[in-house]
Amino acid sequence: MHSRLFKKFFVPVALIIMLSLTGMMITMTLIFNKYLAVSNYKSLNKACDAVADFTQTALQQEGDSINESMDQYLYYITSNISDVYDFDVITTDATGQVRSCSCDEWKRSRDCRHSVCFSPIIVENTKKNTIQEITTLDAVYARPRYVCGRAIYSKGNFVGLVFATAPMSITRSVLRTTAKYYLISAIVPLIVIFFAIYTMTYRLTRPLKQMSRAAQAMATGDFSKRIPVTTDDEIGDLAISFNRMTDALAQLENMRRSFVANVSHELRTPMTTIGGFIDGIIDGTIEPERQSYYLKIVSDEVKRLTRLVKSMLNIAKLESGEFVMKPETFGFSKLLLEIVVGQEQRIEPKNINIVGLDELPDIGIIADRDLIYQAVYNLIDNAIKFTEENGEIQFSVSSLGEELTFTVSNSGKGIPADSLPYVFERFYKVDKSRSANKNSTGLGLYLVKTIVKAHGGTVTATSVENEKTVFELVLPLNGERMQNNE
Image (cartoon, rainbow, N blue to C red; front, side, top):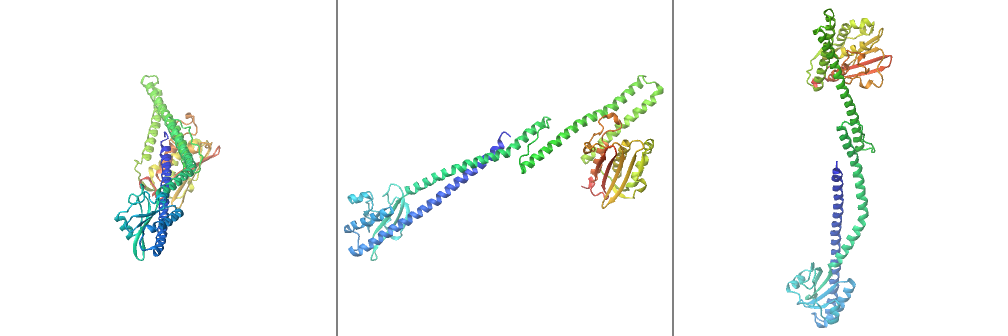
C-alpha cells in the first residue's frame, strides 16, 4: 500500500475542505463588501441631499448663486454633516470651483488640497445625473473613494454641486478584521476536522494494509494471517469475506498437497507392483507355474490405474465444460436394478441384506444415462465396500414435483462427524491408512458430486457412527438444468 491510498483519500478531502472554506470566505467577503458599498452610498446620498436642501433654503434668503457670502454658511453645513457621517463633503459653484470643504485644513485657511475647479465633464455629468461611483474625483484624492454627487438648484436654476466622499480604507479595514476573526474562528474546527479525517482515513486503510500483508504472506504459502473484524460496515464485510477466502485457500492448499500425495501414491503403488512382478517374470525369479497368478495381480493393478485415469479425465472434462452431455429418457429404477444385480458376486460373500428393490416405482428421467449410471454405481460400490458382513443396504426412489430423489443407506461404522463435510472432496478418504482399501482411489464420491452438479442436482451425506450412512441424490426429471442447457 505504501500509504498511497491514505494520501489519495486524505489529501483530496483536506483540499476540498480548504477550498470550501476559502470559497465561503471569498463569497462572504464579496457579499460583505457589496453590503458596505451599498451602505456607504446610502449614507453619502443622504449627506448630499441634506447639503443640497440646506443650500437651497439658504439661497432663497441670500441670493440665486453661490458666492463668497455663502462660503461660511456652506462650510458650516458641510462640517456639521461631515461630523455626523464622518465623510468629506465638498460644494462648488456652477462653474465647478470648490466653495467649501469639510476638512480641517479648509477651516483654518479657507483653502485646502481639495480646492480645485472640477472639469466641465464632471460638472456636466453630475448636473445631468446623480453620480455614485468609486473614483479619485478628478484626481482630488490620491486613492479611489466612494463618491456620491448631485446638482444644487435654486428656483429652477443650476447653482452648484455637492460631493460626499468616504475612504475605501474603512471598508478594507472592516473586511480585514472580519477575515482575521473568520480565520481565527476556523482554526479550531479545521484542526478537529483534519484530525477526524486522518482518523477515519487511517481506520479505512488499516484493514486494507492488513489484507495486503496477509495476501503477501499467502503468496509465500502462509495462510495463518487473519484480518480482525472491528466494524459492522462494508469494511467489516470485506474483512469477513477475506478471512473466509483465506480459510478456503488454506483448505484448498491442504487439498492440493493431499492431492499430490494421493496421486503420487495411487500411481506409484500399482506401478511398483506391476514393475516388480513383470521384472520377476522376465528374470525368472517367479516360477512359471506361479506366473499366471502374478499376471492376474498385474492385470488388476492395470485396471485400477485405468479406473483412476478414466475418473480423472471425466472429472476434468465435466469441470471444464468440455464433456458433451447426451440426454435421453430412461427408467431410473431399471438402471438401479441393473447395477445391483451386477454386484451380486460382491454382495453374496458378505451376506448383505438388500432392502427396497421390490418396492421401486417406475420413474422416467431425462439425463445422460452413462453418467448417471456411473454416479449410482459409485454410491452402490461405496455402500457395499463399507457394509460389514451380515449387514444391510436399503434403497429408496421417489419423485416429488419435477425432481427425483434416490437414497442408499448402509449399515456399518459410519462416517465421523468431522469428516462428513469433506467426503465429496477430491481424493478424500475417511480412513487415512491407504491399506484399509487398496481398490479405493478417493475419487468416487467426488465424481458423483461432479456428475450430479452437471445435471443441476444435489447429493448429500448423513451418518450415525457405528450405525449407518445415508447418501441422498436429487435430480431434475426433465433435464432442463443440465450443463449443456445452461
